Amino acid sequence: MKKDKIVVIVGPTAVGKTALSIQLAEKFKGEIISGDSMQIYKDLDIATAKVTPAEMKGIPHHLIDIKEIEEDYSVSDFQSEASQKIKEITNRGHLPIIVGGTGLYIESLLYPVSHAQVEANEELRIELGKIANDMGNKKLWNRLNKVDPEAAQKIHPNNVRRVIRAIEVYEETGQLFSDFQNERNKKESDYDVFLVGLNTERERLYERINQRVDEMAKAGLIEEAQRLWEKVGPRLNVQSARGIGYKELFDYFNQESSLEEAIDTVKQNSRRYAKRQITWFKNRFDQVRWYDLVEHPQTIENSFQEIGEFLQDDRN
Image 1: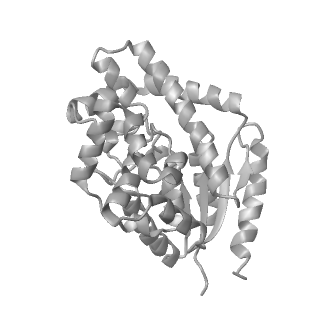
Image 2: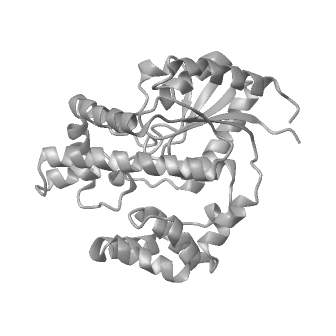
């Protein structure tokens, strides 16, 4: 059976994924599906580096601004909705282009595994979140480590949401989260995929991230974060409130840090997240074609040529 062709653009923050996706969409008659876990939220535009209407250049964008800030959105939701969008775009004779830095979203789309179908247990999630809030992230991680050390070794203790999901899957099914992950390694993708990875030299990347945060602050990041803080109040378990660029400023609003300290923490957490993104994509996807469009913008022509050849190759 012939698989639908898709292009996926991955990489850390601040390397030009959005700009490249629009250029590719213009050249290859594409439509863009966001693979970002925060851009789904309405009114959260600055910290999420959401594409603006002007930047879209008339290209259809999907899975942006689809949720209110109080709502949760799961990997399973993304897997289902992105798959449907791919079908619709392909049926229109257009090229689906998935772009984003949320590695788990991209992986779930390319290699769907059965743990994504395990329904959320909200009571358990609240209970586990309380453990993290009251006793620390490491305490919650230790609970996972006792039942599933293989999964625990692959999840950072500060990735509370992922730790909770791993415990939840075990509690709800009796099966280890790591077993479901090993299932992914045996799967073939449902799609014929061209994977583009964007990255640049580490020092240059961190410089761009720091600059981006400063630009966000000038563009109204503090005001945007304050609106979110006033709306969610103390409910820090709300998914949207845990995004980088918001949670750090909550300390400032709560008079637990200065504004300068909060902005510095946004930069630090953004740099750490970028490092985790790079590690994730390099470890989980071995077929990525990597480009550095920051230092070598001319190589974009190479990507155009390779993608053009990929789209013309119907042997698969």
